[in-house]
Picture 1: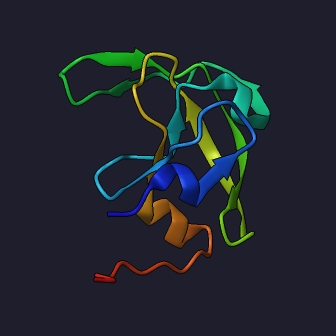
Picture 2 (picture 1 turned 180 degrees about the vertical axis):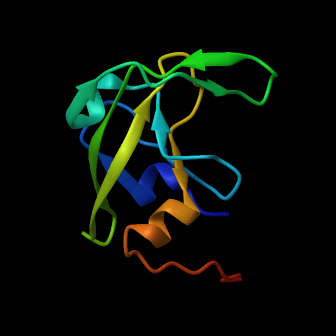
Length: 105
């Protein structure tokens, strides 16, 4: 099993981002990881526990992987009460990233 804390390093305080295929967009509860953002009324996001959380702003997050690859995540939602940093696989495709998942054992 990969140690994601060593695989992804970001500008903010939290180190772990979860790559997800079910999320609607990239999101984080860590306002400190944004390089820039626009405050606005972006509605709510439904959470897995049937609750809803307010989206406070949308912006850019810069990530640096353990192999020194730089990623720029655009349209990341700041959701203060979310429990995880999420990267949406489909949005990565839309942003021009190419990824693959394979068993390395």
